[in-house]
Length: 298
Image 1 (cartoon, rainbow, N blue to C red):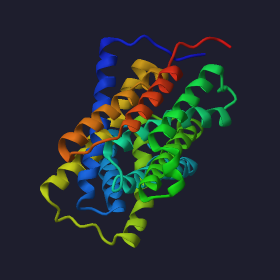
Image 2: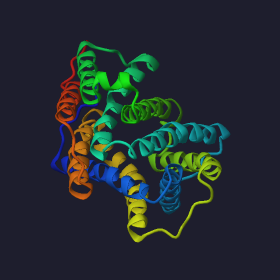
Image 3: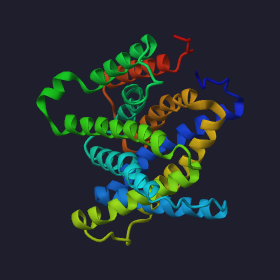
């Protein structure tokens, strides 16, 4: 069975908006990193986003789960979907361009197919999916450059950190389907971000010390954007687009994010990417298009 749907103009508009919101998040995180340590940056992201989403839950009078196992599932989801990828990618952005980070972030869909194939019996690695995954990994290899990987430079390590973060996102997707799929999405997102905040707080205090609040206005603006708009707001928009477009079409958002991040990075921070990076993105985008192509019954 497939959730492939015909996209309405409204669905297209909101999908593009989601891509713009997430694409701009890479620049805002990089700006915050000019003044904040990595883990503090992540703690701000999860804490303020959780507060906003709990407000949404309370206003919507969504009942809270009473089963302790669900709250444990929130902790695991927070670790997989927030703590690990947010921290790895924030650290990586100190050493590679925002646009490059956004391109490598697109491998989330590639890893998601592989993880789903391993975890769920109704997800099979068809010829089409295998072709898409292969193209995706060829794109990654082209972007990073296999010769650079052999050098184990700080730059290549940062790129591998982003890939590790995308694998964590893929694992989180499988975990959400197994443990949280029955919950209202607003509650699942609020619980997840609460779990990640509870995990981040002691880690941040141990590594970075108490968070500082006497920050420059541009830093607060960046924190406000990536926590309230690009995290809390984007989660709510994500589920709206998911309901209208279906999970398969929603994958198209990964094609919108990198161009936005690349343009903003070049405009604001004068970032420049190599030719092999653009070639790698083209291959990765082609792989994602193949994965999102019309499905046939096998």
